[in-house]
Length: 237
Length: 49
Image (cartoon, rainbow over the protein chains, first blue to last red):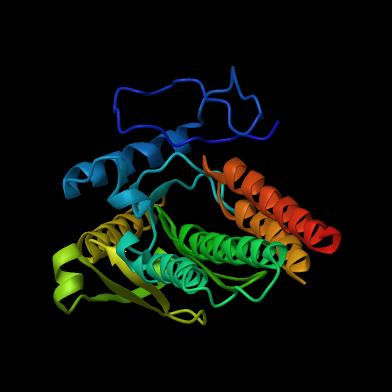
């Protein structure tokens, strides 16, 4: 039976507890293996050192130890951070969507379409509402599912370029060279978000995460994870 | 044409939901289908009217 690992809260007393049900696959009666428990414990210790508490913050853009699995996740891997662009970056398309509807209603109110049969105007109005809804839905999907995931071993960046085109970039923590951040401007400083650039020593291109909340904290966590992974590998763990 | 776009959105949502587990995956998939049915209904209504 597949050993499904579920990341839970940072309760350090929660050891040896049976795994919970995930997506309908029952794993009751199966305990976590010792290596997985060790991974969980050192992630807990690292988060305690950096002052992070598990939870969902900034409208779901900054998630510490989220209880979710991702594609190609390994058994002994634990998600430490799941990051999205700051919700304020969605303001553009929200305003555009609302403006389109307002402009349409205004134009219809001026009687510009009075020469057309009523049923055509009705259908046209519904179509504009549907297109605006589709546009907003598409933009929400792009925001919600374009994430950067930081685990105890890797960084995974998922970008949806357009419809049906997904770019997933993986970088192991021991191949990271110089994580850096850029956070300038009034809006970015006020809302505390910025861009993160991670250069790697491998052939994979550098990873960029745009408009991530608290980039300074993210860099700190990545550095801590990288150092811890290096120490554990030197110890043969 | 918009119905075809709505179908593509359904496929896109499926791909996105595979990326990671989330509590909104079910809601998003439902909404994608609802969007498709709305598009189909509107197309049918336009033809009928």
